[in-house]
Amino acid sequence: MLLIEKIRQKRILACVMGLGYVGLPLALEFVRAGYRVIGLDADPRLVRDLRVAKSHIMDVSSESLAEALGTNRLEFACDHRLLAEVDTISICVPTPLGKTGDPDLSFVQTAVESIKRHRRRGQLCVLESTAYPGATEEIVLPVLSEGGWRAGVEFHLAFSPERVDPGNERYTTRNIPKIVGGVTPKCADCACALYEGAVDRIVRVASPRVAEMVKLLENTFRSVNIALVNEVAKMCHTLDLDVWEVIEAARTKPFGFMPFYPGPGLGGHCLPVDPVYLSWKARQAGFEARFIELADAVNKSMPRFVVELTSRVLKETGKTLEGARILLAGVAYKADVSDIRESPALDVWPILESHGASVFYSDPHVPEIDAPPIRAHSQSISAEALREYDCVIVLANHKSLDRGCIHAHTNCIVDTRNAFAEFGQNTRLFKL
Image (cartoon, rainbow, N blue to C red):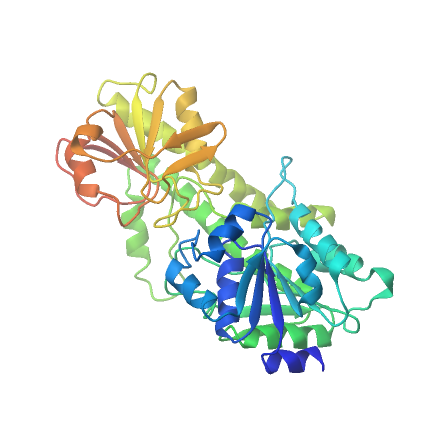
């Protein structure tokens, strides 16, 4: 039976490689679609937890995981030999930046080599991990083509970028449109059929290169606009204006304006990384992506600007950064998530320490940080505890943030997320 027929008849065994923020929600949607699913991950401890319905990400509750396991159509494993049994493989492994700032596709390469060792004819392989334009055909296709195998004949290959927004309750794997670009039309047919059962809308594009570029354009758009508003925030400080008031007034225009908001820097698995992939690839072709590189520089300057604001507000109380006890309120990269990947807090922290400050943090979503050289545990926020700090810097505007307690018992606040609207006369506040 042809693969596309097996997919439509829900007779396939689907595999998801990498069970993080992208892979685990996708695996559950495949189960809901009626497929049998194997989730593969290199972390044995993670696999053990998932087998007993213990979820490690906020977007997948342990209850929904237990429900999926209860169908007997979902299993988790570390053994890549199981790849020989599956019909489709979705690669959802990390693609970070290397130490030199260049794209690191080593996790993808490891996954593809494993697929090659255990493959069988007729399988579909879909890369979901973020990559530069051309990566699917330059990195994945040659490996899977070894031995004379042909895309669209012995195997099928496509790129379909993840669009996950951790913590977003409105837009999920199911209702975010899925971009699909196949190496051949038959490859695209199979990939579209796979996702049609699990995602509400499929957007088919001409090639993997187009799909790869779509993903990078989306996040570069956000990065550049955030950089613009970060620069405007700095400008507003110089001009003695409230940037938050300016943005809220500007957003009343019903056309030609989209609000973006300043912050202490970019964080997460996409925005700090994806534009760099695009500028790197452009450089390989002799094109200088000046907007992207300028935006990256502006966004990377924000942690130091936060420290400058902190120094200013401390001076108003007759103190300096040296010897100050400073609490970071929220260290996740954005509100209401536990993800600290590329979080600006991890940049603000060492800069404060380099000026002689003692740094602590409180974040109900992040009980501990183990990101050398930073190793610390979350502190409780109470009236008594807050009196021990010279300044509180709000870096993540969690719903659970105890604003009332912070306001009542803290004299110095640096608010980088517009978390506080009104203050008593005794509070010294600097807003980003």
